Image (tube, rainbow, N blue to C red):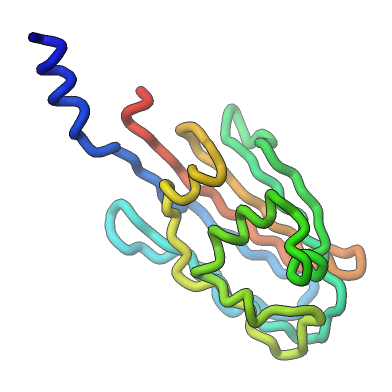
Length: 177
């Protein structure tokens, strides 16, 4: 009888999950390629927030490489799962990287990527607006455990890092403890 009572009380309770962005830093190393117009975290309520980033391209760029690095906080930031470099122009035309494709599908509602093709034209506005950390959609693509995670995106043009986006998010699933 006690087992039935515990089962009835625990089963219908919703998952107590909390996930939100903690930090966002955008660094432009070469101002001749473009300028960062917006780089901020916006609070929606006490438990949710979103990020918005806008970058105006100042020069036409034919070939852009990206480096994605994931980190997990454990006595400092440690590399976690993925450290990927790829040609962004090749990916936009062929969708040829499985891991990047998973991230692309997650970001698609927030970034009008259909407008982005190579070469990136002068005065083109690249933006990501109101990106929320939807943990349920994220965990379907990237299984993670409770903790604090960071992502560093580096945009490389002519073998030089021109733009870096660093952000971290915190994820807690209170049912894991």
